[in-house]
Image: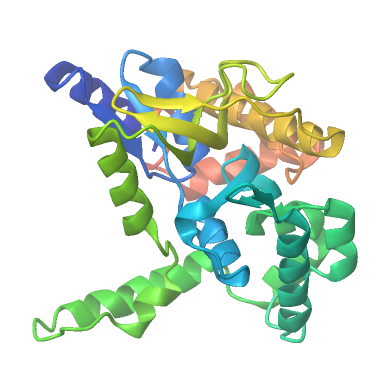
Length: 309
């Protein structure tokens, strides 16, 4: 997807240089990083529904209007934490963490897949992005995946079923399968972001944009998923406090993985691809990396951009 995204961005730049590109393509943070590094002349903002979902859940749990909820949100796309919650001028972090912990205890009785527990949440001391389970509960997730279909196979089946249903032009209601696909609130978050750009609103959204000094200690050109002021000129990151060492360490490792992946996709450098694999905390050890990369190339022949040449 990186070469395709870069081609689209360059086309937009030629046809409409003042346009703002909103990137939904997953992994949203990595693709946005590639766009901002390799087509810097085009204003680009990365968007994911997870921050919106978290804000909506906090709003519901605390019985507060959605527009009054402010999150101290920090990290990368699919690798983030909510460190604090305020409702208007009131700090409601403790209440939100308690509500989330209560929800976890309630859901913990359902053995469908690994989830948070109250002990792990005490250590994290924040509301973690769902995808952090892969890093915090790696062994449990590996066991779960060995015993169950992969998410990709589930999604492919859901989409096949949906396409069959959508062939019926008399359908007037959303099929139930659509809720299984994921991506809830994408339309809400996207429409509000576009409206606030168009109206030069100066409102706060959580988006993927350059750090630009907002998070102390993180390079300014790193793309982070953080609160930003949105107006007609794009996204402007809001200064915040430094990340805790455990958060900072994980963010840097995954960001290095992203940068190496981008370099591999753009240059065709196989060493960068293999280094990306061993840099990610979930990746293989160095003796497994080359065989894994070889298998990835074989299994995805024709789908790997510059590596197909």
